[in-house]
Length: 475
Image 1 (cartoon, rainbow, N blue to C red):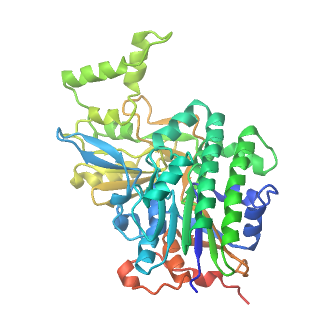
Image 2 (image 1 turned 180 degrees about the horizontal axis):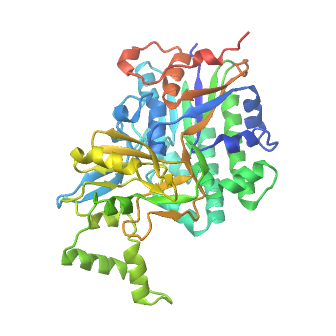
Image 3 (image 1 turned 90 degrees about the vertical axis):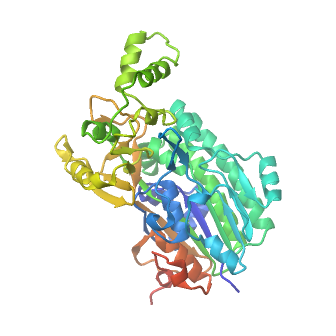
C-alpha cells in the first residue's frame, strides 16, 4: 500500500516564533507533532520570495529551471513600455509533484499553493487563487461548492492595502479567511480519497512582516493583542493538523514547512533611486510625460495640504502604485530597473545585458552609513538577482528621492532564507537527535521517494535529493 504524504505550508514562518509555539498549550497537535518530529532548517531559494520558493518546493528544481523568479512577470506593450503581471501556472516550466503522481495514477488534493493559478485538471482536486483574487478549482463541481462556502482568495495588493490601513483589523480578517480555508480542507480530505495532500496558509508571512516583535515577545510570555489574534489563527492551523492526522494511516508522513523565514529589519534600500543616480536608469523628459506626472499627482484629493507642498512631496518620492512609475522610465535609455516586490532578495531587469558586469560591481561596492548594502548578486539570463545585507530590505517603488536608504515604518520584519521543517511519521519514531539543514528542492524528491513511486530521476531532473533516510531512528 502506498504511503501517503501531507504537506502543510506556513508561509514565511520563522523558527524564532515556531520554537516558542511548540510549547504553546493552546496548540496541542502542533506541540505533539513537534515533540515527536524530525526538525530542521529548510533553506530557501535565491531569491527567497513566496512564489519562487513554493514552486521550487513542489518541482524540486531551482528557479532558473522552473522559470519563476518573482511575484511578477514583465510583459512588453506595443508602445515599448512594460507592465507586470502576477505569476501564474503557465509560467512554471517544470513538472510538479502532483503532475508526476497523476502519471502514476495517484490522487492529489492541492489547495491554495502559490502561484498555481488557475487550477488545472489533475487526478484529484486542485483549488487555487493567490496571488489572484479569484478562486479557481478543478473539477467544476468543487469550484461551485467552494464558492457556496464563501471562500475567496486575496491578491497581493489586497493584502497590502488592508494591512496598511488597520493592522489589527487585517489580522482578524486573515483569521476569518483561514477559517473558511480550514472548512474546505476538512470537507475535501474526508470526502475524497487522496495519496498526496498540500495546502498553504499564506497570511502567516504577513503576521511576521507587521508584528514580528509582538509575536517574539508573545512566545516569551509578554502577550499583546496582535499575539492573541495570531494564536487564534494558529488554532485554526492546529485543527487542520489534527484533521490530517485523523485521516492518515500509521507510517504516513506529515511535513510542516515554510518557504522562507523572517527577521527584523531597520532600513529600506531604494534600489531604483540608486540605479537612477548611478546612471543605469533614466526618466522620460518629454512634455507629454511631464503632463502625465502632473495629472496623476493631482488626481488625489487635497485635504488640508497645500497643493504645491503635496506636489513636491509626490515629485521627490515618485512611488509605484500598480507600477505606474514604470511609465516614467525611459526604456530606450535604461540599462536596468527593479520591478520586484519589497524584499531583501529582489530582481532587476537587465535591459542591456552587456552592462551586467558594471552594474554588479557598482552594487557590490556601494556603502552607506559605514556598511555595504548588498552581499550577493547573481545573473540569470536577462535578470540580476540581488540580496541585501542583514537588517535591510530592498524597495523598488521610489524612483526620485534625496536619500538612498530610509528607516522602515510598518514593515518591521522581512524575509530570510532559513525556513522551518518539521517531519512527522504517524505512529512511528523518527530521528530526533539532530537539528538538520535541508534544501527546499529536497521536498519533492523526498515525497516521491517516501511514497515509493518508481520514476526516472533523470527525467525529473531534480536539483534536490531525498532525505527519507534522515527520518529513520538512529540506533
